[in-house]
Image (cartoon, rainbow, N blue to C red):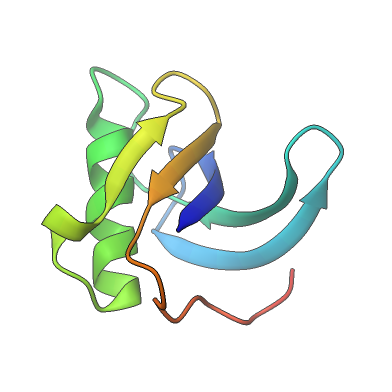
Length: 87
């Protein structure tokens, strides 16, 4: 299944902020990441953080698109329990 994430890099700590509605992307999961958006560091940290938060191995979380965008689409296995917290 596809998971659309709004990444906020350079945060003081990595955390899931919750779901929000975005006029451009629809319902997105807002995630703060402590890594800087340099040379793919934030993407790698976000992938690892999502995998850990969702209880999945890193190999099961794949960045499909949005390499240089704040909005990123990840592919995760169908049936994965997603965070329910609303922003």
